[in-house]
Image (cartoon, rainbow, N blue to C red; front, side, top):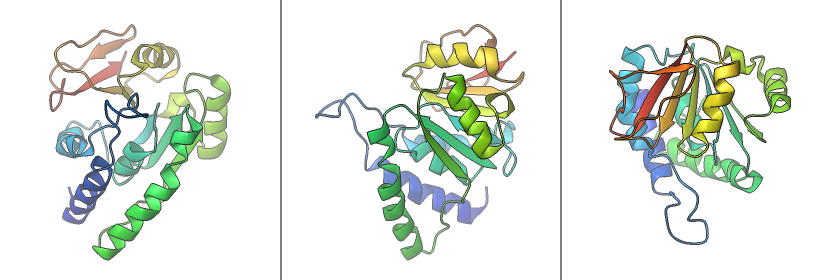
Amino acid sequence: MDLSIRDSLAAVAEFYDQRKVGDSGPLGFRRSTDLMTLLACADRLMEEKIIVPGETAFLDLGCADGRVNLFFSYLVRLSVGIELDEWTLDEYGPLRSHLEALLERENLLPPPENIFLFHGDSTERRLHDAVARTTGLGVESFDLFYTYLVMHDAFAEMLAERARQGAIFMVYGLHKVLPQYSGFRLLRHLSPMEEILALYEKM
């Protein structure tokens, strides 16, 4: 990985990882991906061609405040996110503005302009149509899908029907128990990456 990209990703990860919502407080039901963990996975994901820089089309099926989309935007051609809770998605803009100011002060790379976020239900065809109209890609054209553990079964069922053969479904939050999904095979030589990220290939 290019050093300037790695340094920028480290700053992005540190920024968002300090702003997690965990198990306590009024918003304790929310969960946040540890971006430092994704940074630790990034080189392996590229070595295994799960991510091909500048080519991969990425879709986060429950993007919350868009942090995973922003992180992967440095490594992929297109970074798309869908979030059901509009008030959570509303946090994306203010957080990105604060992050961009930080990156500028540190003379680091700003996020690419390849991020598209949508409010709605990731399993609904009407929303998939809206994504296609905006980005030019339908669900069947994405290479890489991502979700935190919440709703992983429903997303796997939808992707089994709509994703292309060979597409990868990444599930964050898995460790010792790795579920099986109809229509997918677990990439056992990669899972669980960093003891938390499981990868499945659409058959």
